[in-house]
Image (cartoon, rainbow, N blue to C red; front, side, top):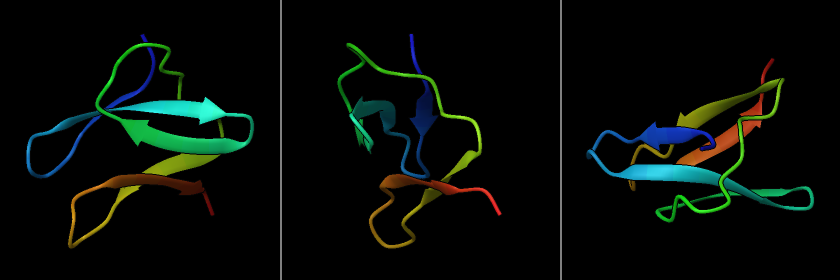
Length: 55
């Protein structure tokens, strides 16, 4: 099981990757772990999670 994030609205999202493209999906199959050096942030308006490089 990969990385799981529950947003402020209570929806579960799972981290996926296609090469160097990272995205969140509601489907837990083939989810990946959070890469080192990245953090999860949430869009204030929509509640969708995103990852960005840690400063």
